[in-house]
Image 1 (tube, rainbow, N blue to C red):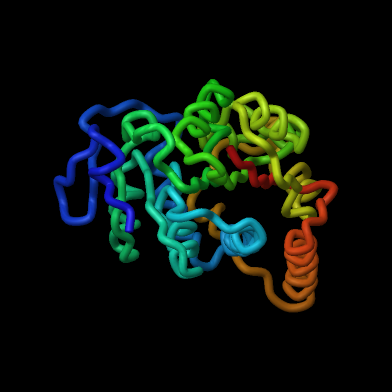
Image 2 (cartoon, rainbow, N blue to C red):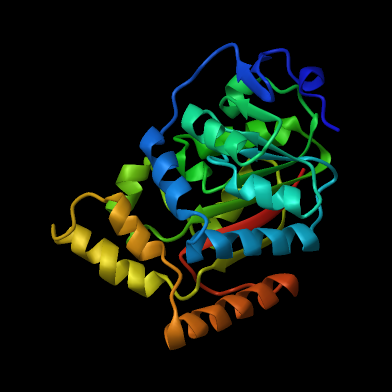
Length: 275
């Protein structure tokens, strides 16, 4: 069992199960995004498949201990990791996300950025950064900090959005600095001192729909801003023949991940790296 007080001198428990940092830094992520994510996560085909992909790499490349879900929002992934039988700790700077995670039954929860949490070097057995690094201006420095905090042989599990050509108002709203390719993600991890064990694309079916329905209309000025209702429509689980086809494609991706095959393209990248 992880003892939070033993690995950080900058955290204090102010509410049952919630640790707060004594200092507070800003983040490039809108607080309102936690609310709409909380509304759509449970039924979203995207969030559910990402969780299944993360579960597949965790089974293939198991953590050495507790997984610290850095910037984990409402704890949707943290809860899935815990349900797999691993100890999981949410580290989330937004109070809305923290409150939603506590409502989901997660404990302990750390309300802080990675920097403000003040974890001691070489104390974290494993960490996840699921669609987080794209929010960081200096990703190499951020990943280097993560490398320093992990124990020797500790693993980092990471997902990021792929291809700058898919940039849209969604990226602007979310506070993204960049999208990645498999190559640029690998280089960022290696530049921070990690050894990359596995890297692949996921969501192979989505680049074309995203480009046609989001990126192109955004560039043409035909799409401005996003709404919760719009997000509900785009994330809704598809039914009928199309829904079945999507599930077959997602199952093929999971088989590839389980077999350590690389998916050649997709709207997200996923990697496993170790110190």
